[in-house]
Length: 254
Image (cartoon, rainbow, N blue to C red):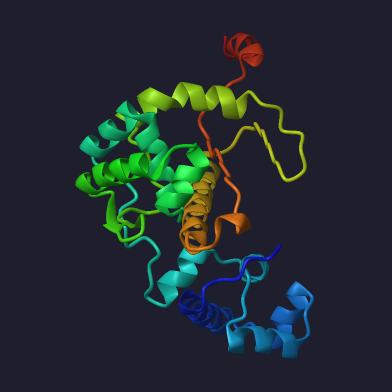
């Protein structure tokens, strides 16, 4: 199901798309041909701001541009909130899994009452967790068990920080060891020999994709829980030789 973008952000994105079209000299008719829509349909979508996430992705692909670049064209930034936690914040979340779960749900737009329902506890307990998160400057408590988060929807864990030490092994076991064979899942493993220049291009593309993941999470934060699903993505690249080939490579080198 297509998910609509909030009007306040939608028009900013539309303005960025128009700037990108102008810079690339792409007309409404040409864009329509690329995404298989009529020219009037394209004009109607962009004039009314009736843009969906699915349609946005199609247009971005047709223009070969990502959401972060679109927002930069209009001077807007999704990431006004920090996406890296302090050492104290990470340590508190690593030491209390329940607090971490509460923070994750609130950061993704849930209310305190939603949290109580989802984790199977009472509102008094959730209020205590929220007060602790407020003390850590991760949220700002609001009436009726609601909160405004002070960080981005997707936060990066410190390379050798408390969260990574506490949860990385478990996450790898639960996420990567499971079979990727259901509809809507994707597992791509590719290995080849690349030049230094090509490898740098690959790393930049991975960073761009990660930025788009964060921006989409921020766009969807205010949507009702029934219109979202929890999604995880692992993006990785490193200099690596499969062990079964390593011996042959040494023999060739010798």
